[in-house]
Amino acid sequence: MIQGIVARFREKGATSPEKAVTAQELGLPPRFEEAMKRRLGATGIFVDVGGRYYLDEARLKQVQEERRAGGGMAGGRGQRGSVLAIRMARMAVGLVAVVLALSNILFVRSAYLSFTVVALVIVWVVLTVFQLFFLSRARSRWRASEAAAGPP
Image 1 (cartoon, rainbow, N blue to C red):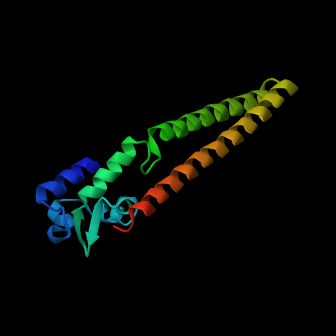
Image 2: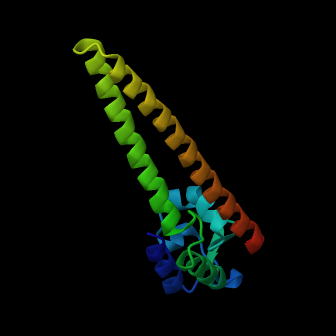
Image 3: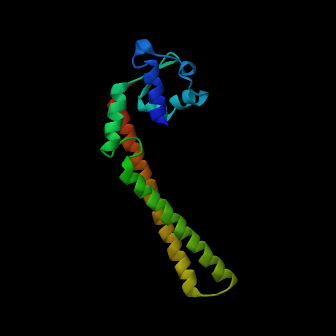
């Protein structure tokens, strides 16, 4: 999606403050301007100059290099993969714990099964803590790279 927007900026020649254009001139939807107030604007790739925008080619290149090096806004593909793996494990552990708890309540009355459910809930909590840790680390890296880039 970003590459398509970048292409529009290049087509219109909006690559400097003097050549900045409006989102309407670029044919971009209103949600572009909304996104510029959030993360998209924070990247510094597209710069707002009084309601007109231009593409900062140097910042785009810097962001692309950070992503290739494993940094960037989301912390790189390795960390993204770790968070995804943790989410999938949490979902599986939670589902198994619920199924075992229901079967223990409805069908089998077993102390061993109760112990297993408690152990699975503990594992689920630990996975939740790891997920929060990974996400907070990714956010702090993103903020650090944003601060290093300076104001757009």
